[in-house]
Image 1 (tube, helix red, strand yellow):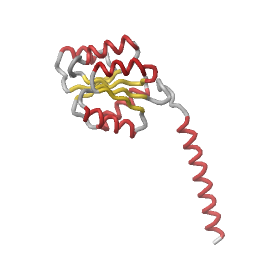
Image 2 (cartoon, helix red, strand yellow; image 1 turned 90 degrees about the vertical axis):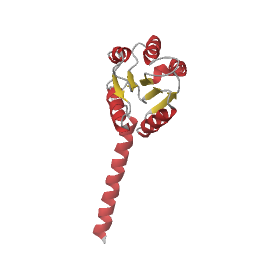
Image 3 (cartoon, rainbow, N blue to C red; image 1 turned 60 degrees about the vertical axis):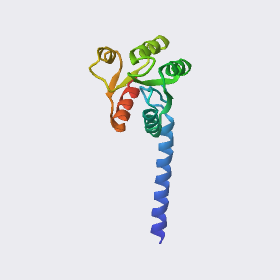
Image 4 (cartoon, helix red, strand yellow; image 1 turned 180 degrees about the vertical axis):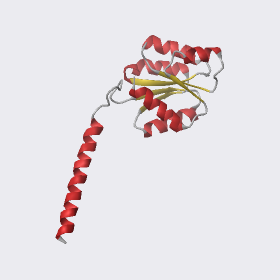
Length: 157
């Protein structure tokens, strides 16, 4: 019985040390991050896509802001640009195409990393924009692929 109590005490002590180390690691910023609390801005006219992306990225610990139209996205970026680690940008939207939104975002912050999200790959404007952004994903894409790409881009910004 004494051995069991000693083993339980050792296990409890080890568990507490592990919890303290985990808390300390969680409070430290990751080297290479542009911001200590990564914020992602998603600009897409499809609200169902916005909601799925927001839920997936928030589940991974990112702060997510969304805009369902290009002008709203530009206004929002102007307000929060200092905190944005990555912009996910749809190309084909009403009012403005992704290349025009990209130009507007670059006027606000020339260094903002942008991940293009599009269903079109052969359009000349899309091809030109793909050469200027950090990467692109073709719709439809698995949420895990998006999360992996976001991790890759945010951690090396």
